[in-house]
Length: 423
Image 1 (tube, rainbow, N blue to C red):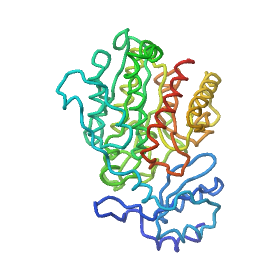
Image 2: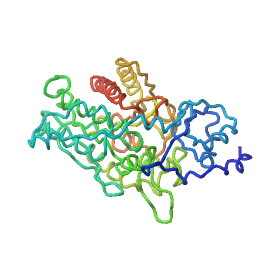
Image 3: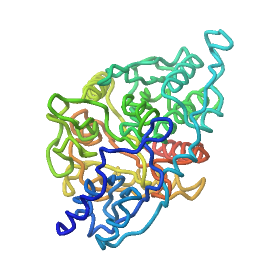
Image 4: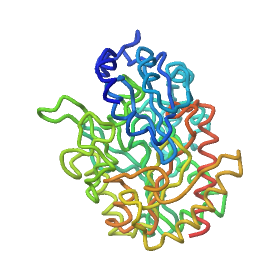
């Protein structure tokens, strides 16, 4: 396809982003195409010249966003593809404005307030409101929870989580750790992590099964582990993926924190190009967010033992098991993990019929070097280290409508309950 290089260079470069009246990057008129797998590498090579964006790649397809001025050039590539979204800008508009959150704790001026209302899950919210929500959730469960920080982001924001425990006391049980929104544009993962935390708090006093979960495990839930990137998606570029790390002498911004973990770091499952969406960094573990996350994860694993680690992502509806760095390597307990994943997928499907595929990461989605669940499995010593790709399969992709927040959270909660019931 190199013969198209001269033609494609006529398209505006990706760096010359169009801005809307609010100063945000505009995706009006961008279309999403699903490229057949045999053409994926060739199209990826041309993306920069097309001013296009890599969205999602699995073993079955490659999703790309193409700006309106490059549609004709993309079609001239003559690759097998399917149009799955006609206008990303219109999809983003359907997310609506970020909904304000009124803290009941502040309003009532009490130390221990009611659990935040479920209306929280009917809309997306600002980063600062997420911090307030977590604080309110903790204050509604004061004897069995605390807010904690797992290091600091590149721009100085605390990586904030909530720690929940049961009757045995803080730090007395094996740990379950959830990370959300490492890829900044994956907003649904923030809400699903908070939904699970909310269900644990709500259920502890009136559901014996939920009480048993917290009496058996300490939960460490971090809904937004890439706060700088998340804020950037809300203020400037809705489809930003990486952190906001800058480096001397490099104009491109950002590291993919989920290709930066210092285990099986180098390889074809990540990029050495700073402008790539999967840029792994200059050295393993050199992203500040990664340092904070792995330090916290390893400390918890050493002091309590790590029963389960889940890194929540979107989209594609997948349950991903170790390993990502190799399609031939297998975790020692992979047969047990596959059995558990089968049960989780069945439980997720019951409420709404949402189908999740499952299997080792490399063979199920793609090769990923320097990934979190490989590190959690082999370095932190987690018994189970998974990643989820939540709704949907591409129709809305990263800009899932707000009316799907509660169904996404509920089906994920059903899956987690099945997992906890069958360890």
